[in-house]
Length: 61
Image (cartoon, rainbow, N blue to C red; front, side, top):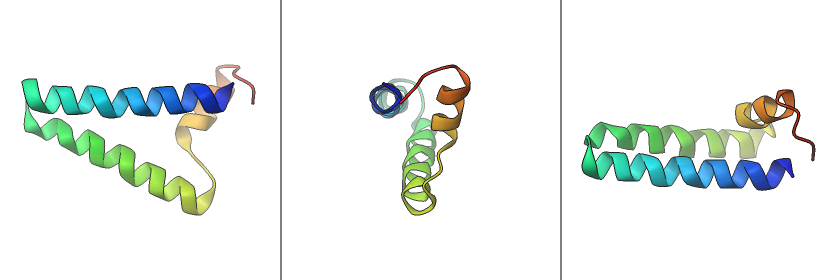
């Protein structure tokens, strides 16, 4: 369950940041970069802040 919610949230964050960069300000692309860097970092370290937050909110694997 947590994995499904994680993927939905990350995908939504990327799409929202892209829409905001087109319609509001191009600096929202930095949020997209932040998400990408965090995904790469979690691939190397096997740790992700969003997963920790979702666990504390009570979502189970």
